[in-house]
Length: 91
Picture 1 (cartoon, rainbow, N blue to C red):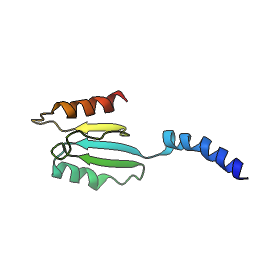
Picture 2 (cartoon, rainbow, N blue to C red):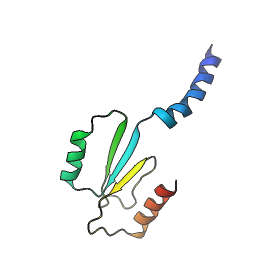
Picture 3 (tube, rainbow, N blue to C red):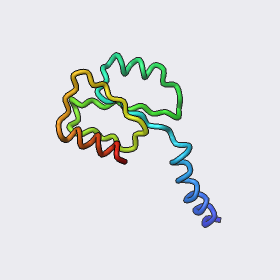
Picture 4 (cartoon, one colour):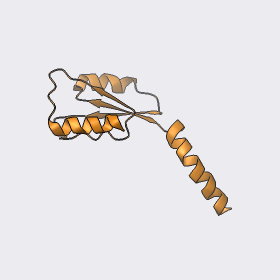
């Protein structure tokens, strides 16, 4: 019985991760009022929203994000930040 449960779990986990798990959306360099408006309308349990401030992180961790939205008014990225974004986009 335990073996059958392990087989079902090992077969079901990739299906869950690919088709059912929540979608993660990253909002990079958004202002407080912009992010607050987004959080007010986020009522879907299958969507997770992450706010990433480029002022605080030298290289953003965008791994696992399905979508990345960047607010770039006057945005200046250093080399580490550009590499982090390129790495996330290429995966």
